[in-house]
Amino acid sequence: MTRHHAPDELLLDYAAGALPEGPALAVALHVALDPGSRRLVHRLLGVGGALFHEDSGAADMGEAALEEALARLDDLPGDAGPVAPRARAGFEWAPAALRPYLAGKTWRRAFGGFEEIRLDLHGDPHRVVLLKLEPGQGLPPHRHVANEYAVVLQGGYTDNTGNYVVGDFAVGPGAQEHRPVADPGDPCIALIVLEKPIVLTGFRGRLFNGLLRRGWM
Amino acid sequence: MKGGADAEAAQEVAQEAMIMVWRKAASFDRTRASAATWIYAIARNKRIDLLRRTRPDISTEDWLAVYAAEEPDADKSMSAGQTYRRMKELMQGLSADQLLVIRKAFFEDKTHSTIADELALPLGTVKSRIRLALGRLREALDREEKET
Image (tube, rainbow over all chains, first blue to last red; front, side, top):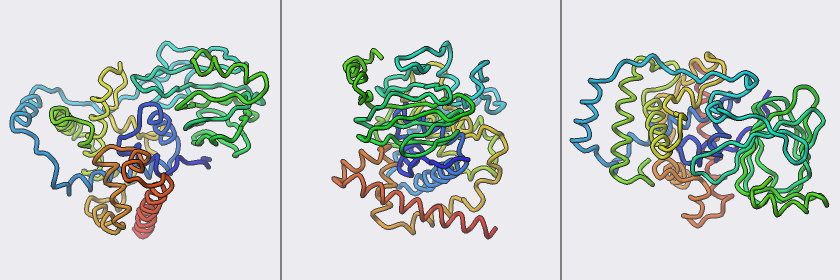
């Protein structure tokens, strides 16, 4: 049961196609797993369609461009419909939108004892990472200096803002310190999108903040 | 969908979207979406594709792949009551302030925080306009779906 939805304004940004790749991926995964948010995005696409039809200021498509498009249509084969990329063994929990990012990736042990996979974006400076926490395992206490989004893909976690399960979307608590701990059951896997590096707040953690800022950890 | 793209790029999006509409016409499912919703979704995805042209193998070509539920039949008849005409009427029911923000998002591809900057409004004001507008939309469509 999903209890934490992405905020309306973020779903609007997503439906309008305005989000950078990292946040767009987080919202896409949430939307794939959450019927309520999916419904809203679908409705917003309807709003987009309705607005475009009434847009009297829209530029006309040039005649040459139309010619060209029509000519290209004659050479096209039919289309069998959508084919989702297949999930790799061990990555069955990954929704279709995430699968292309996982090619060639493996879990790696990170500072803090949890496992991670860093995803490569294409020109978007957001940092996107998959984290895997064993039941009862926690992240070092930290706070955020910029936007953070998280989507749970397997298991669940709890912090001082609540309990998050598969499909839930969390917006980072900002300057407030938090320390997420994985729930009992399956290991918790979550996609995390960071605008800027986190700031570790524990005594030992503070020693590492310089490395984090340089992207070494 | 005009903002951020020059005329040539816009034309390319229009061409590509048109070709996609043609190719996918057979798989268009009216129990899932109105035609306007479907075409908008295709154009939106084409534009994102072109902006990220350097991306290897990550295709947003299929809006179904982008929005699809993980189980294929989860969203049958999702669009009950969501016709093109009805969506236009609902938009007309919004306040000028609310409509401005929604239009800017769709026409200029701007995030709500960029819109807040541009309009010199506090972020919270823009968020609450969006939430009010979407709340009305949700309420009206939910009510109609219950009636049908």
